[in-house]
Image (tube, rainbow, N blue to C red; front, side, top):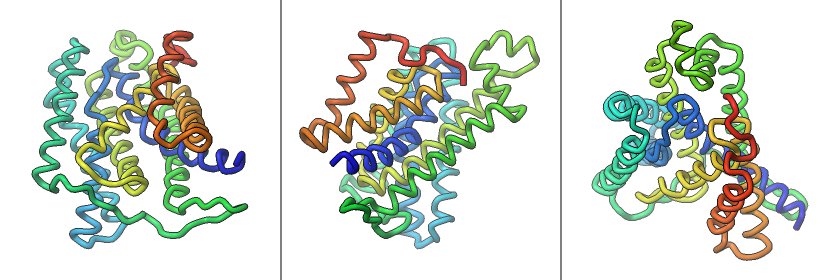
Length: 284
């Protein structure tokens, strides 16, 4: 059982880290909670489904279309809505939540209310010591590490990445240095949309497509950010593994129905003991 928990916890944590990283980036740079972030995940899943299973496009082309849809929606969300309300975080949170509900209704109109089963990106099952893990979830774990590693290298070793770090640490100081925060915010929202769409493809193959699928990833994103420390990508990565293993232990040893409950209890515990999260207000 210990080996089962170790393997399943590791692969689930990778998916959770991929889900949460875009949410963390937006708060780091813009200091706002994007409550429509789950829509990027839902949109990525549905666009991939429509391209692959309805239109018959290849897997790679469908994946690219899903990412492009996430980037486009992220940019439009920022340019048409958030940029006008940036000085009022509460207004941003309310408006993005309303946007998520509107998108949920739009998905029902276009795709119908019935849940849809999506084909795995790759097929097959890996068996080790009596434990079965699908190749699809292993691929999701690998992709999450590649994406997160690439993001860490990007923000540390590129000019644009250092500009993003500068804005996340000191917005006024970045302006004095000649950095345009609105452009950096636009790039961040686009990247967030891309990460959300990538996560959405794997999350939909791990569960199923339906119009409410944006809610659980949003909860996971908030949980990861709170536990890890708001604004810290490293903290979010570690928190994703903590939450992944807590959920795996809970569902394996106690009951599968307590998956979400364990996450909520962990959030309350961290808020009581360390309100700033395990890594406080760290930089990117």
